Image (cartoon, rainbow, N blue to C red; front, side, top):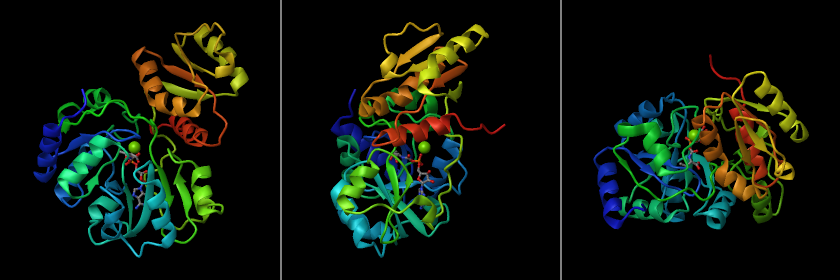
Length: 324
Ligand code: TXA
Ligand code: MG
């Protein structure tokens, strides 16, 4: 059920008292704390099991708060904020006066965004301050896209869950290094490279040239319990059937072109043809295959343009080497 006005007031009270609130956004659910309360922020790291050197994103209520959280905000950053906020774009800026080092993991930069979700915006407006929130999952696992995912994964570790329904976009925000005049993408997400370049009227810088450090971008991330193996689209079905014969409980992501093929596997997900629908469903599909007892997931990468870039990024990380 979607959060009511009294839920939002209660959530704002929990934040003021130093508690943790799960908040719906258009991308994924966040595990929120008052960004200016260091002990609440410390609890976010503890609950997530995340190293304190991995900075959090500060969620703010509108572009008018930009200069309180960032400092020396370049004109390009302002342009992107005005054009894409509220929306799935996070800007990395020089750390402003309201951003404590606990939130930035000790960095002199801060990541900020205005989420495009009515419940999140109502909370930010009622609360009045910034909400530091990573995705509301345990460190390294799949991000939650429903309130139920949060309840299952975090249980009593979170003081209050605001239910805003399923997240529309389904993958995290695009993180852009906006500290200089030529921005670059640090993490692909809900706003596409093409959208950003159209607004800027010029290409983005290649990420390797960014001087901004990006802690927390591990090769293995967004990972379900099952091992994820990526193969060429035309090999997905043969590989899945072979692994199934070898005794694996195989979950398979069948590409749209092969949607009608009968596949011998433990669980089959037919991937939507539209990248928006694929992104929306991605984390739910991974969770579903875990729940159905798969130990191996075979998938292929979509074409890496538009939202396909963010989907491919998450699949590669889900397939990345696991910490032993
Ligand atoms: O869509 C999203 O961005 C979601 C929702 C809840 O807003 N949040 C999210 O947060 O994905 P999290 O903590 O899972 O990912 C935040 C990423 C991390 O990989 C971190 O390294 C990067 O943002 N980040 C945060 N502050 C940074 C900074 N000052 N410089 C560079 N990277 C930063
Ligand atoms: Mg995350």
